[in-house]
Amino acid sequence: MSEDLTLDEFQQVKPGENSKSEWQESKLDYLLSDLLTGSRPTGGGLDDGQYISIGGTQIDSEGYIDLRDLVYIPESYFTQVQETQLQKHDILVVKDGANTGDVAIAWESDDRIVTNEHIFTLRADSTINSPYLFYFLLSHQGWKQINGTITGSAQEGINRGFTGKVDIRYPSISEQRKIAAVLYTVDRAIEKTEQIR
Image 1 (cartoon, helix red, strand yellow):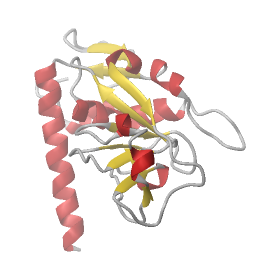
Image 2 (cartoon, rainbow, N blue to C red):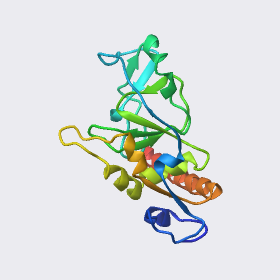
Image 3 (cartoon, rainbow, N blue to C red):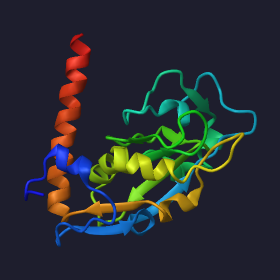
């Protein structure tokens, strides 16, 4: 791999492969400062309100949070679940349902949004750049590892233990930032191209 990692090289990084000594490998759980699970009030949510509860249906396979068809929660419940308020660079992983294993990132914080019980919220520690971690989990290698932890038959899903089974390969923090910046730029270019169509 070259010093300035290309997108193709990033996609080909495989867990257990030590082709460069400056790259490290850790289980996902060692790279997190927090792993949160949301909830929602008994009986579901409201059709309108000030506070938004997002779940698996708002996360798509391309890594985006879809803020259409929202479910709202009352302020009285919101105050009980404030720890899951969406913070900048939170990584969201769908726990169960049709989108199990899909990941997205919050590019901005929004103190009106919390997650429900169908989402894990991952907060990276200082060892790893959150956007880099997001792109790794979104890559084929990340997706394959997450989906390898799915259990159940009638209601498939992943549990908190998935973070101890996913291997993350990463370079220095400065290289992580560079890789994430390139991938972010590519994403925005694709987004603009799709808007033109």
